[in-house]
Image (cartoon, rainbow, N blue to C red; front, side, top):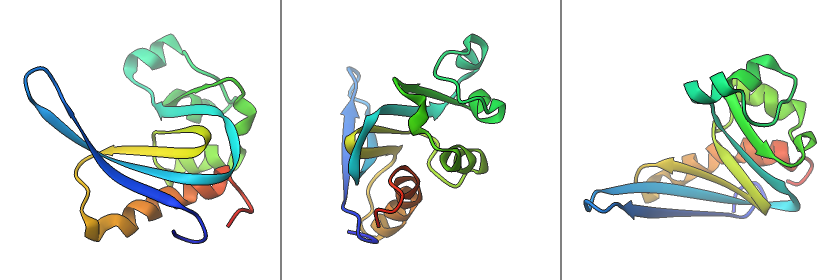
Length: 131
């Protein structure tokens, strides 16, 4: 728990057919209200060229990030500003009332607080007033 918000942090691994293993750290923050499914990720060159994904009307954001959601209104201006400024994780998703941030790497128990601190501002913008 951090700043009144419940979190889960876990390490997971994916092994391919050649037995190469890639590790990930998943951080899940519990939001106080469910939101529509949302996926945000940095755009690739192909994605920029195709222009797929929901549009926010902010060219700097829309050029840099791809959004998949049925309802773009759930992306507040403060969140778009935070993405452009680089103060929130660049890729994340919401399923119901769970905000999920996944990063490559191993989980170091001594570094859990910084992992939570990276996700906390994003949770606060998506779930304002719920501290």
